[in-house]
Image (tube, rainbow, N blue to C red; front, side):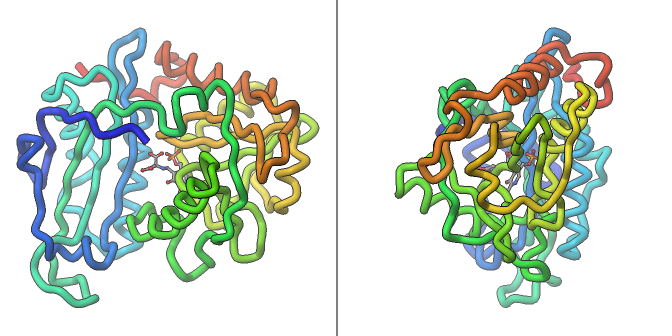
Length: 308
Ligand code: PPE
């Protein structure tokens, strides 16, 4: 995992604070009870300048996550969008990863969070490749996790809450300990859900499958991007229930995520997928994904917010 490369400022509840001063008290509610929601967004250097990819959709999901947890954001989507663009400019970043965090702050301890103020921070820094430098090209080896994703009506999977990442860490640590790049979690009925920090796509007989939103998956923005691109390219995409064993007999498999982008999977539980190399359809989708971003393709103008 790439270490954090410090930038100049972090925005904290209304102020641009020098990087090293962006601190919280050890008794903030979020640190004890997982009472925070967040986003991960990328800004890319495109042919038309630095642009944030799908900023509105990410901020909308942040506010939706907050709503599920009865947190009132002190800032509107427009305000957060404005601040994000200011932050990138102030930090002089051409390409970066952006991490907004909305959290219950310092006031009182105890499970009831209502007395604690809702605080917010946005950080941006240079972030390298998520699953290793070669992952995008050569693919990754993964395992099916012994940990399931959250059962319905336990932790809401549609909220990008920090609490969900306790489950993600169990999945990820197990995979790392056993020598894999990532784990794929099943859901409470044993169907395929997602990776610790990525959505999953499967290709069989030229049809593209991805677990439906009731499979305890985060409604990924990259997932949505790939579905749209694939359909435009003429592929059939099905959001559906996927049995575990379909992973092993898939022609192609890949992960999607803001951090992971479009990462091919070359084996699952040491069973080789296809010929163990990036599959032809995955390659086409990955190429198209990066082409659209590189060119900031005007056909997808609404996906780009340019740093002026
Ligand atoms: N599922 C999970 C559990 C998840 O964390 C992510 C993003 C996705 C799916 C893909 O969502 P999207 O980025 O909207 O396409 N994971 C973020 C955080 C990763 C981390 O280690 O932190 C990310 O990719 O930014």
